Length: 70
Image (cartoon, rainbow, N blue to C red):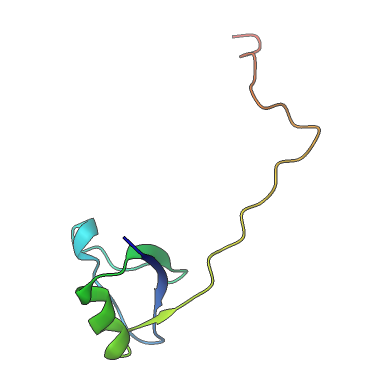
């Protein structure tokens, strides 16, 4: 299923039915492209947003730690 990255429009709140009715966070979230979210877009309750950039891992950071002294 196609996915959308949406955030609430300024001054609006958007409950997410797939998340128990919790509000869509102000920074946005990845949601399924369903009739519900299409209605939120049509009603100007939500707007499409750019997905946040994923930070690249640094070259010197280990991929896995050995646990160290415990």
